[in-house]
Image (tube, rainbow, N blue to C red; front, side, top):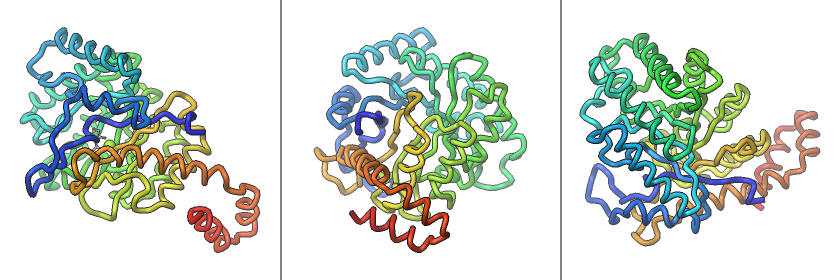
Length: 343
Ligand code: XLS
Ligand code: MG
């Protein structure tokens, strides 16, 4: 059963335990050392930001970027790992302070679009065709700072630019309602899918649904997944958990609300997610209080919780569920699900 799903995470998911209020609590780990841990933790693929693969890429030309990315591909091959996707990191540069694609400054917008083309070069070198767009700073802190109509048009233009640059790539937009901005322009799956349909090639634009981002938007992650599945646009997922409306916590999958996690596993399994090569992506962080040396348990635990919930999902008496739905006995159905989760 476990073999039917392949899992990924990104190097940022093994991190130093930094926060804005104090010193880091764990030493940083070199990229090569992180890579060595993927397989033993039960993972088959790696998610990348462009500069995870090619640090300092802004100071390199296209040929150097491709050459460095090819070296990373050899490292992946050496570990028996695939690259799942590459995402342009458009939120840490002085030129993207006010957004990348939606910046009011034309030269900053050009930087963002050029950087995205380099991201695609890196994806090609790593032999993945999937680009994730987390639109981190494409939003505002005050409503009057940007024109929201123009901003959305610019996002469509930037997506079209990427689609034209490489006719084989697919783009998964990762919606999030806030953080680092107060208000993001693409806060939900519905917004992201509307962008996809407005693009020059809707068949190549879909979504990456992160559980916590849906929760931060006041939405249920499994319903967001259902929306994307109905549109055939669920290219990947970022499973994690979130304790209410606060900063993006990236908690271990299922660690806050087991039933919410169960329903995500249930809808993914029901509609054969993964059968067309999709990976189950995690975007989880270790607790700041976790001591160094044991700061990868959140990854293996999240995977284990997924697989254990999969067993619960598959052991449900489907005929009984249908019978209760038919009888509109939702109280009994409620008890049945809670009982299944209690084991
Ligand atoms: C941040 C996002 C980020 C993306 C990748 O909130 O989840 O980690 O998944 O750029
Ligand atoms: Mg994410």
